[in-house]
Length: 640
Image (cartoon, rainbow, N blue to C red; front, side, top):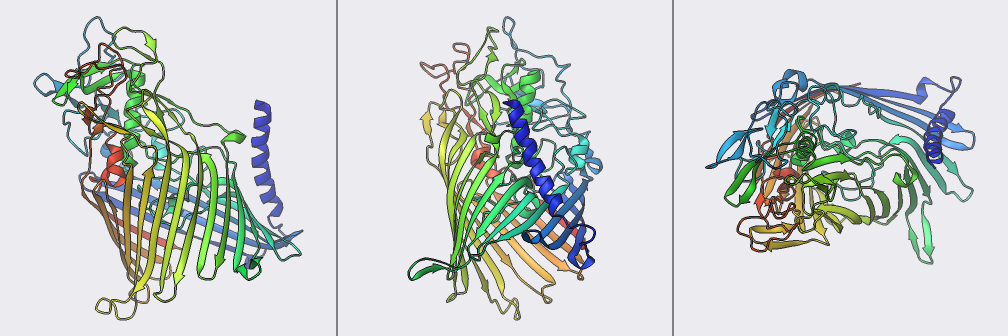
């Protein structure tokens, strides 16, 4: 079976490569008039409050396109390649914040009287299996989880190593979050050859009926969505959030994959007498590349969305080496004692990265059409979740007896990427009467998994409904600009977790930390001056349930046809960190871990004791978790 799987994988890549090579124009057909080469060089320099330099990225991108015309039975043959390489000097210029000198010794809350103890200074009573070797896990090169967002307020906290994995390997998860200094400096130059942004061939096959089978084969981005910032249908390619959180253009942060995309284009089509589409198209998408998750950012990078990479790294360090956890033993709302756990007792054990096999590829179908001023699509996709899931219920050592077993409610996990099925659709409509474009997009998924402290495995599955409603309109504001209108684009994103669970327990709520219903509203306002050479704009996004807002003003100045300067900022206001059940009161090692003040506390049953870490991040969302990341941003680009 393994031989067959390897053969299928090799066949897929061989098909992509050989088809591309076979359709490339030969030297005799290659002409300068048929080839276009362009690109840009860019420097992006960002400064962050309390961190100084947060980005000094220098980028070179080259784009090559060759139109080969007709080749055999195929027409409109075109080869496209995009290469991108970058060097981010922040890891050299600000290495005390993000590089090999980052972090240091830490103090954790939980000493008698509410004081602090150093990492390695928690309780480890004789006769138990608590305690760890500080030679293997020294008190250096670390930060306290979430310390940049909130203080240690009687909740869970532990040390997180932040130096690159070649400098400090603690907490680096093999095959998932294990980047070295050079991996961080030169992000595109890795074992997945990300410097090849695109390498595909387009070709058409014409039928006598006038219909066209149009195919694109190779490394590419496939765009299904009609929205910005947040994705609803546009989930075929994973996303690199480590570049600039959610704020870069999706075109720049999607991770291209090896994909076969083919469209059967029918053009104007009569469905029945008196009813015809102005355009009708059926699309098949097969992503046959090896699975890749979203890049959430590794702890120690400037952009770590939801601070998830820091939680993962700290938890893996606890599993591999043991460590001190603040406010843990005997915890109540007033706090608890800092506790030294041993290796293999709590934390994240490993990440199960799906290998290449046919069942791990993804397949999508789309029907799209146009009827008058109305455009629409119907979409279906089966894929692996690009977001990680933490599944409890793994074997671990009992901190008090030394026995190995599966303990209910124990905060010991493996990372998984479950299979997800999606159906959805989109509609856009241009209203001529009010000169406005309206957009609606929706997706219904099955198979997604969420943290859930009501379950003994600490996760559960739920169907999810996501949707977005948006409108785009040009509005004249004469006192600001007599010559050009301003573009206004508004969207509201909604998410409903259909199998949401949450209950009130003795010390607080327990269950799924994510909001059952949540909405995020965005607004873009953009003006045009100096014949379009000066473009000011402001983007705002507001997470309604988290009560967190980001405001991103910027000005683009096209100095000449080649050189552009962009000055901008990104500022957050509102509520940042939020608390939720942290499972200190889940009583995995009954009777040793029963929570004081909770009568009849059962094994694996949470009493709802809450803190900022780790699950409050899902209530805060990506905007709330970035409250301390205000930046001033300057970008210079020369295009050629």
